[in-house]
Amino acid sequence: MANYYIWTAGCQMNVADSEQLAAQLEALGYARAGSPEAADMVVVNSCVVRQHAEDRVANKLNALNASKKVRPSQTIALMGCMVGPKTEDLRRRFPHVDVFMRPQDFGPLLETARTQAAAEGCLPAPVELPVNGPTAFVNIVHGCDNFCTFCIVPYRRGRERSRPLAEVVAEVEGLVARGVREVTLLGQKVDSYGHDLGPGLDLADLLTAVNRVDGLDRIRFLTSYPLGVTDKLIDRVARLEKVCEHINIPVQSGDDAVLAAMHRGYTSAQYRDRIARIKHGIPGVSLSTDIIVGFSGEDEAAFQRTMDLLEEVRFDVVHVAAYSVRPGTIAARTLADDVPDEAKKARLQRVEALQERVATELNGPLRQREVDVLVETRKDGRWEGRTRTNKLVHFPVDASDLRGEMARVKVVSTSPWSLQGELISAG
Ligand code: SF4
Image 1 (cartoon, rainbow, N blue to C red):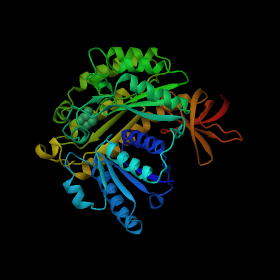
Image 2: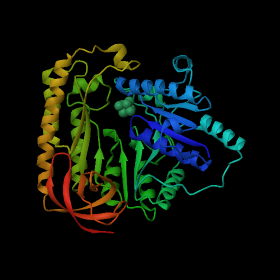
Image 3: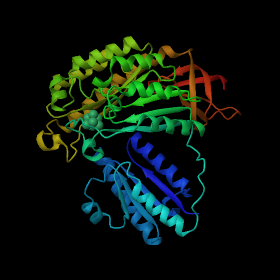
Image 4: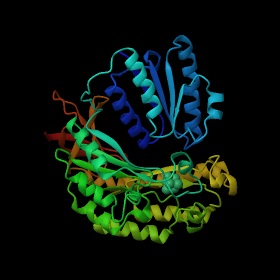
């Protein structure tokens, strides 16, 4: 039997694409290989959001050159954001790569797989595929129309394209039939969902439809563009029982001039207004955000406005990165990278320190509370899962296998990053 190996870099959208491709390869009779060296087909699912990610992909591809020399029949495919509309340059740099595929464009590889499977006379009957644990990612809208000046995504993933509602619901039903209890609906701007599908259809409607899927327990969605979090969406998140009370809503900066330079399309006042509506409309909501420090033109006063916003909103989680120029973006062409590296590093540390304090203060009161945890995996001798509000929870392993179970856990201690508890019951 032929087998495959997929190496995935980058965001959850890439993880979802890899899972979807794996399912389609397995439906063709391919089995999962334990290593690239052991595989007939190796797929590198690439990310170029940061230079570091692109370098890792290039290193991986170079390493595969050696494995292909040992095994010349091996098919190597490069997929994802590194593959733009033109591939000449990539073909020159990586002549050992056989197939190039843009994000979600699985066709060329599946064609090769089908031909190989047919040649071996092993085209199988459709099979029920196993899934990887009780949670799954589902891409619902591809691409982004925003063109934030620092971001390469619109150039690599193209314009926004929503998947038909019925197709998404059918995929979720299929996942549930194979043991999934929680889905995360994904989009670079997830709240753009439906704009291209016809008047009136939006993410709130999709959540309503997915909420009806029997056997599903939890629904999450990310990433939210602040102005896309409408009152209708807030209302549905509050009312639909399976939709979790957690919103990932990147602000990037608390300073209006920096936000304008980033082309984010909102002011800090508009962002604050969205947050106030979310907090008022969804009791107990948890919030996470993304911050870039040291963007072009960010002086000390501008940075302080970001700190003020973080202090005021009190996010549960903050993902912070120091600005680094991404070739091919508007910022790379038109804006100076004018904040010294030491200042970027210092600001990054100040955000991390503030967030550590805020998260400590937010998690502390959860001590002695009972929370519902969907158990995802066993790690370092402990069960690991998440609450509806996306808090990571660990509790000790006993004799029972709790993977995929909903566990009632009493929190006994907390840290800024996770909760530690004791099992009360599971089922
Ligand atoms: S909203 Fe901005 S940061 Fe997000 S994917 Fe689109 S262009 Fe990039």
